[in-house]
Amino acid sequence: MAFCSDYWLGGNDEVNEGSWTWKGTDAPVDYDGWHSGEPQGVSAENCMAIYTVVNYRWVDAHCTNSIRYIYEKPESVAPSIEPVTAKNQCTKHKKPCGSIVADCSNGNLTQVPKNLSDNINVLILDHNEIVVIENDTFSNLKVLIELTINNNKLESLQSKAFIGLRSLKTLKMSGNNLDFPAYTPTLFSFIANISLLDISRNLNFSNNAKLSTNYPDKALGVLVNLEILAIDLRPMPVFGEGFKKMGKLKVLEFNNCKVEVLKYSTFINFNRRIEYLHMNKCQQFVKVEEDTLKPFPNLKVLDLSDTYVHPIQAFQLLKSLANSSMEMINFHHVNDESITNNSTYSFEVNITKEMVKYIQTICVEVLDISKNNIVDFEDGSVLTFNRPECLLNISLSENRFSLFHAHRLKISNSFSIELKTLRNSSTHIYL
Image 1: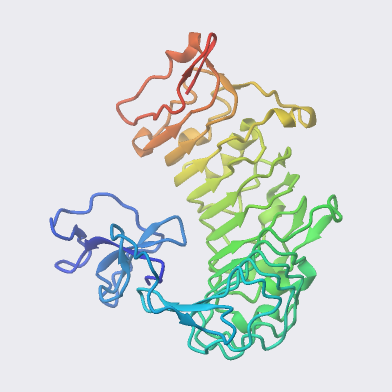
Image 2: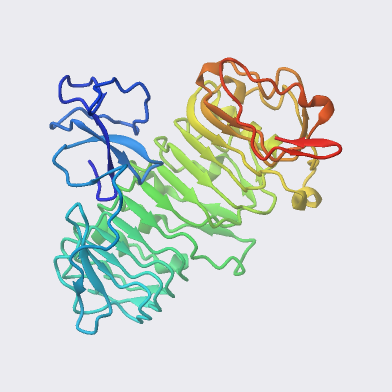
């Protein structure tokens, strides 16, 4: 299942199916970086590659695929460059994996060029001045796999804008002015097989900022094969029943965020297969109910970095994930002095055993609780886990542990603590 952006890692199971070894040394692969559901072990997929779309996890793929090795030096010049339009608005080249790319970025275009070659697989229209996508704009691009229209001025998508894109897998329209009414019920029906949709950084939060917002579930619900969705998060989001139809969705990304309240009902209509939840830079106080994550029992990655929920609420969120296994919990900078006037929580944080009772039960590989103004912690709290053998890395950097308590940060023989940004002052050590 290797994509054009994948890279070979050098592992294979050609000699003995399921027994992975490194090419050249035949040493066994003793680290598990496989993506969920991989390796599939079917159709002679005997070589190991990186799946860049989802957190750089591993997949098994056909060894005949023409993709780069992870250690190969990139070519300085893209091969086979040639004009793709009469006015040289775009350039056309072939990727090492064989995909044909038309790059029309940074061209001050106000509309999609009309004379694009019908054999292109990737069309890049980023950083232009396009306001509307009209009906039948891409109707001749039958083999187009990836379409990016990031950072334009898009405001309108006509109902048949994507007709003809029967091979499309990736659609990115980030950084535009597309409000939810732009996504009409039939808009995406012509590209129902896409696996990645990025419509983040589109919403103007100054309009009706405090109102509940119904997300376009009828439009998005037709995307039954979608695996990755990146979308904005309004102050009071309402995800309707149409989201239940997105049964293959595994990755949710909210990186343009003004959410104010999160509760159990917020995500109730998403499927239970979600494995990666990224909610970043919600930089106002967010009130969170402890059962908010109950709809996501299979989470592997929870990333709340730079989202101001406060450590007390962040740790309470893990109630629904108790006794599970996870790859990463990222609570970097979930506390900020700016939220102290809007919440009952103190900026100075003392970690208690009660606060961490849920995270202690989780088999987690990477834990980040850096930059949270943690000044102290009780014995048997931060560095105590039911399954310490799971933990590969814990970051406590940019907190404010006093000299009197710093000696309690001991390195266990079951895991190591990487001490970053170590600075001395008269009263504190920053770890």
